[in-house]
Image (tube, rainbow over all chains, first blue to last red; front, side, top):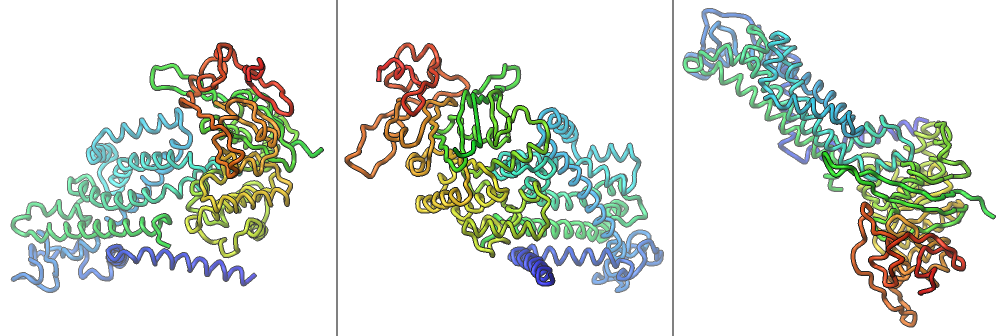
Length: 298
Length: 325
């Protein structure tokens, strides 16, 4: 008995080694992953590593430039905003909210979108027509505008902003999944599973879905980064995270009056958004290459 | 007399095709009036051009689709009368299928072991170890090694993939295997290996094959019975040697004359068919073969010929009925 369990664990290890082998073939993906891990660690240990509290105000040090600029102080490394709050600490704490927003939006929109897309593609008929026309209706309204309307109905706040953005992202997942499902549905291996007696659930989730995952994963990572962007945009417009919360978009919004006099207060949150989005996109590309067995060179 | 496994009488399958919004749908007669008997250990070859309904027949036999009309009984049970799920499940295990393209018929995301175990997982209540044991047994039966168990299909050649597909079809211990052009996607050298494997398995396990093909040299090699189809209708049916040595229907004659032969003395006059295969949505009046037939006359364009017995085979042809050929 122990030999079989050893065999299965060694297979699992082997699978991971194989995955890592293909993933690490892309240096940019590894760089993106390392940066993403740093951001995640930063978000997890924000309280430990940030030099000051995110809301702590040092009135006497308001609008202080970054440490390497003349007049800057080392204890406020990236400078301070209009109220004398440490920018570095606020950005570090902001990473929590941005990552959370990305995760929640992607998990919500992807799970709903993939499920609806699979059902639409597999069932066809009026079910498909109903689902797809509803999705067309959602897509007919510009995404950010729809999110704004939804937040206006639900009330401003980070959670409502995430739900609203998730709703605007769902149609792209539905369309993508339905298209892949339709192209896979008539393949012989699906018929083979049918001949073997597989039911609809098994056909949808075990035969078809894994073969549709590559474009969905890419769409998911792209959505993760655009979700961070859109949450920031809603925050910037005052409809997302509310003012004292150090969300990256809100940070830019509350300091936008200072863009001429204290540009660092807007620049550094912007750079944080840029780097996080870039890293996630790089990881997404690497994941796609590593997860698709057809792309493997063996 | 060996046991009768499939009895088909007058099978029809029609699909309705809508040509777009606001247009009335048309009827595509993929299969009309196919009937045959299949006995244990026997091979029935279904022959014809592409689009003649061979694959539709396969879908009916594997119970993926139901016939529009006609009687189909599998292993003595009439499919039309089956209500309970248990019997459907049992019938499903009786008829299994091997597909034409081994690159499309294996799920690229599943390992060989999982592909082979899937039918067992769905249809039996065996434990994981028993399933694995059975899958490994089946792999050695079709000439795959144990270490192939954890590999993905893309790591195999076409011939090996077709062996995996055969193993998957056989793992439920079926009595009938529908082979839908099982070797046409393979290299000629591999074709022989796979055909020999199929012949060996048939002897060993007493399987009955429905062998769908357009390659007549292979059909000649393995078929006991031959069914020649044209545009969804059977045109000639009979024992393999009779059909190959004495083809009666003009279409069968044309098909056979197109097969290359290595024997120069046996060289036949090549009968060239002109024109395209007509569309099954809009078939010609009368005998479906009349626009391309050199023996056609007026009676062929008026009504459809029915199968009549000539010697050991059955042929549907007016020219033959009237003694014109």
